[in-house]
Image (cartoon, rainbow, N blue to C red; front, top):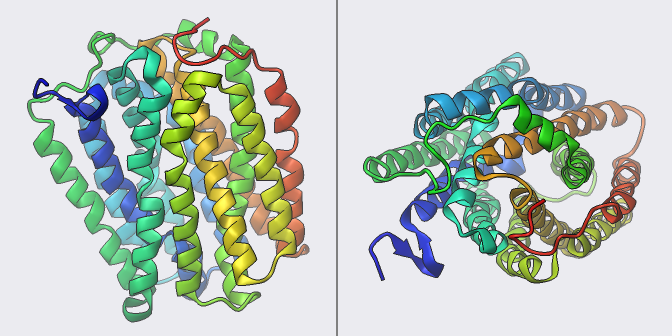
Length: 400
């Protein structure tokens, strides 16, 4: 086996990008269970929290595609390095903030990280993978980058009682800084451009037109926005609801996030491989049916054990949806358009995220959290008939 080929016939660069992504996401994952609890502790209201999280997503709606196009011109490696710095600064500001007003600066500091890293890393690794193994390769890529979704909350659960909220944020920024050092060291002499993509080949307005006019891409964008709305409402409210109304400890909430992350990560490789064989459409339909049922269950369960089981189903559905969605997208577009396509889809995530965080803050003023969860079930239900409108093209290699 040649030196530049590792596990499963994928090149070294694939794993460098994925492991760097693991460290990038580890920072935010360590503090994800306590983010809203910390903001409340500093003095922010639930409405302010929803507004702050909504601002972050709103900035990305405007800036994500321009940042993606800039990245193709100035170089992916430079933009990924800047994203590590941006993420570290944001975590530092969260931990240091002396008053709620300072939280409004975090979305601005973090926009370069959240606006570039995921789509660049995903597009790079998609182009490094064989065309007929997109589902499997992206399953591996997303599995590695999803490990923080359970490892981070588990570490939080172990340390939050002794360190407190602020020190957890200071600890978290170590991970993206280590990721930056590792990424820069191992990519000094390593090409991250896939063999299919000429260096600096930039997508055009015609590329965007092709994306917008593709029925499957349109459905994927629609269901992504619906899911993101529910997901961000959950992220905004769940920790506060679990601690303040259900009586759980912060360490117990961290354990729930860890369980969600385990399920999220565990399903990605098998689901990605399965989607290469049987197609994406039916897997997406089943996944969204589970998502709707999860929100209904969250509205009705109050005990720790049933909520833990429900959260694990939520994690499995999250991982399945993400893997199949990205595999479906990357087999629809040309190699040089993948960065733009991922940025385009992330824009719809941002749209849903802004709506979800804003609705969570707004509705919490006059609706109970269980009722808001039922609203989110209703918001995700239209994804089911929409998925049936997709042209099922099977696995990879069946591009329009």
